[in-house]
Length: 392
View 1: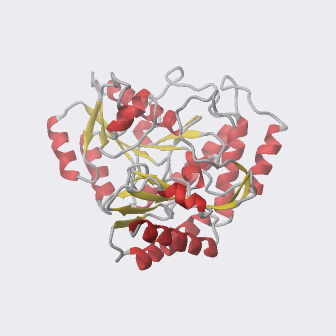
View 2: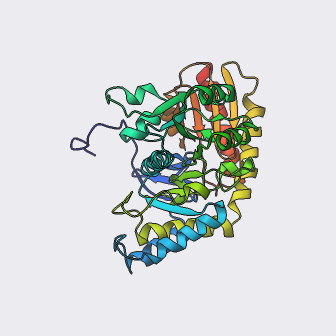
View 3: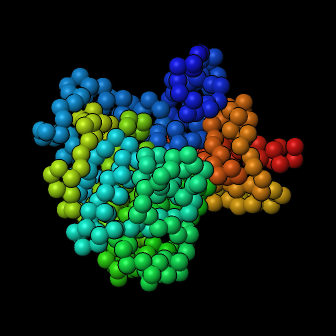
């Protein structure tokens, strides 16, 4: 298939998928693949899930778009569901994770100005990924994806990830800080995890200095870590939380949720979105929440995550060249001692979809609906692939 009219922003592998069911994809030559990536943590319910297909089809036959100039009942219903499962107060809907993070950044700056901070600053972290718009690109802790897009946006202070002392030092020396934006687990950065007591300490630090605690749960949210949201493992609440990816199971939708003092910062005219979020996107996301609840997939993600993590520990922990194995529910990272960017292609040849991020980390983000047999295959096939690669 010709790609001459597509901008060369991607370098895709040579496979074209035609359809899927559950965790299985089919290409245009009839070959099948086990999807251990979920479209990069998007299709948590797998492919062609009947509840999502039904919700989209039924809504498309009624009303796709009417604009936010008018009441959108589906939007109100979805906001109610998100508030119930998260404990947050209000929701702004958008089309993507980057837009959700843009909303959070704007909210933090407006919050700062309301508190008479003329040049509000947001603390962000090394190794983070928050999007590819100019503001979210600047907030991202990856110089490689920033290069060539200068001048970057002002108003960010970068700190090392999982380093509370560094944050306390910033608090002493930077009076313009108004918020902290952090991923509870860095996905794109290599499945990097926080210490168990980090978020409670960060919550306390934010309260001491009247900062907003803003969590980017775009990859960790919607049950992937074994709770609806990763912050729920720590028994704290953020002031702002962003979602996308698994919220729509492939249908584009993002959300910026706010609570308490952050909930009423935005007023009419402060922010908006033409398409965010239309009744069709709301129908898809509502069906995602209903399905995760009815099928008890949050608990299932926790048990499957343990199964995968323990399986990899058993097969790879003592293998020379494997530096670390990290897991947080259905977010698994296997860090090797050397670059392994060719592994997704080799896995594809074996009928398996995986990803390599940060150059050396195999990232696995399987759907929440995988079977025990599929989980076992992921462990066995990836372990065999790693051993073959490290001895080649």
